[in-house]
Every structure is written in structure tokens, then in C-alpha cells.
Image (tube, rainbow, N blue to C red; front, side):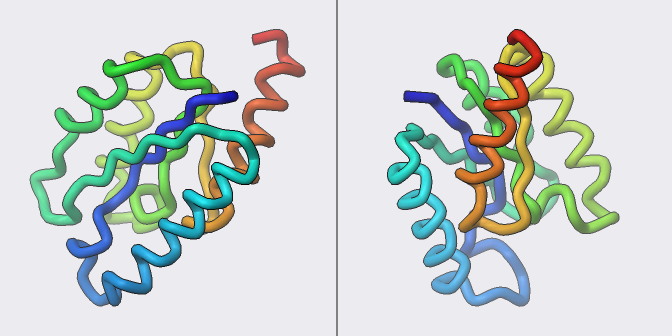
Length: 125
């Protein structure tokens, strides 16, 4: 069983989105992880600056992860590029052996994790 950390925004803090709908997608994503035999931890931070990168670093140090998913909410908007860069560097520094994965939405994270883990295996890691 592979350990996965999902980093993203807490549903109730994202402006312009219905928190219940976002949470429902996160819940569906969690069920997909379980169906694929993946153990998922979530590190959800507030959308409001200053972004809690210390919370992300703390999660990354709690255990070893086989893969870390950086959610689309963090990497897609151009105005969050600095946060995205900080998150990728934190993953690199604190989980150097973990694959890094991205998703197109909360419900397909498990699929992208499996692809990243396969790429990792193919490259002898």
C-alpha cells in the first residue's frame, strides 16, 4: 500500500466556490484513493494569504510518502505561482524520494498518483 499526501485548499476558504460541492469532490477523490489501495493524508490550507507553508512542511515531515499530490487550486492560477513554487520545493526538500503528482481535479488524483508511481518504478527509484 502506498502512502500519499494531497496538498490543497480547504473547501470552506475558497472564494466563489460552494464549499459543499468542493468537499464532495474531495470526498470522492478519497474514495478513489481507497479503491486503488492507496493511503491518503490531506494537508488542506486556507486560501487566504499568508499561506500556511509551515503547515505543509509539518505534514511532509510527519511520515514518509510515496507520492505527494499538489492540487490544481494551488498550481493553476498564475497569481499563486509563488505558492506553487514554495510547495514543490517543500516536497523536494522534505520528501526527496517521493514522486510528485498533479491532478486536473479532486476526483482524478488517484489516477495521477498511480501514473507517477509507475514512472518512478520505471526510472529505478
